[in-house]
Length: 228
Image (cartoon, rainbow, N blue to C red; front, side, top):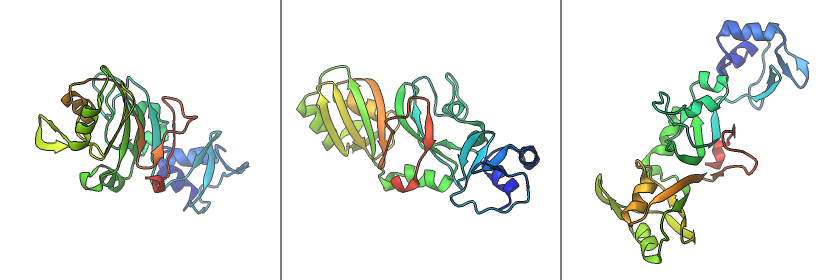
């Protein structure tokens, strides 16, 4: 693939803007400046340095963001900034969007991608991709309530009971809940259905993906689709 096309595919602007970056010496590989826009390169495994920043080339982007509070998972936010504002310009240009949503006051693992087929696979109820949530509760939860979450609770918009795939109490007010669905406010509503309230909510896992220990809130990293 020509170098200009590679930069364009990664969201670094129009073809004309990408050509300008190349001829002005803003693109290099392994320390060597690449100033020929017509240079043919194999994009597989390619890492470029663009304006001083290393950039691995991906045909489709899959981003793991450690979402902080105060951000909306929306392309058109209403009350708070969009999570997209936490990403660099090239990722926004190429059209990454959240895989599902986390509430404004929910923190944790959020995936974003420009792969529409992957979004469908990860969010379709039949795929049952597990998601791990850590909830801080207002009141201590007893064993009966934990068991009820596993057996199923009825939410007000669906007569069919909704079950947790797993529920573990680390402490009386700290609940680890594994869900394979994606209903609106599902964790909060399930906990409310057993007579309690979620005071804080954090998603720590999506499939086999976990938030890297060194990734602070508001930061992002590339994710491997194989880990899903």
